[in-house]
Amino acid sequence: MSRTVRAGLHRPRQRVFVFDSEALSKAVQGDREMAALIKTAPRLDIPIVTSALTILEAWDPRETSRQALWNWTLSRICVVHTDDQVTAIARDMLKAAGLHGHTYAIDAVLAAVAGREAVQGAQVSVFTSDTDGMSQLLAGHSVRMEKV
Image (cartoon, rainbow, N blue to C red):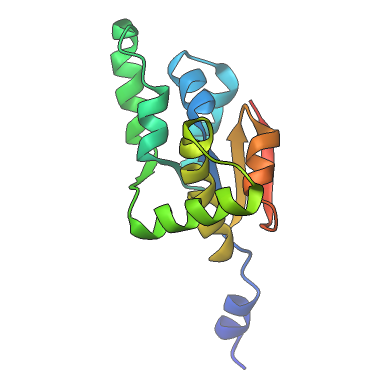
């Protein structure tokens, strides 16, 4: 086996950061920890992802003075759209966790995004204010929770 092929077999899994609405909100409000993550992650080749619905949940139209920071933050985040596959995964996660309704719907979509990344082999860290709810939704997935 050549050295190149062998090195490829032992390549570490890609890391992915997943942001919930609180993580996004803190970033836009200028939280130093979240800002540091957003600045550092691309240099370490770590994508930051969120769902399109999470962006709507985090957006505050009263924060007009922070529009430039909002635009900058979103320019550095990969937004996953809620397609049929994500919806089906979210629905299954809600059912497995025994949850339902609008209280959990957006978190379930974000959990589906995180879970799909984990199933594809990424080391996923979810930055969330609701580690309990997200842990319920992501039961059975190898995902790390980071409290924000």
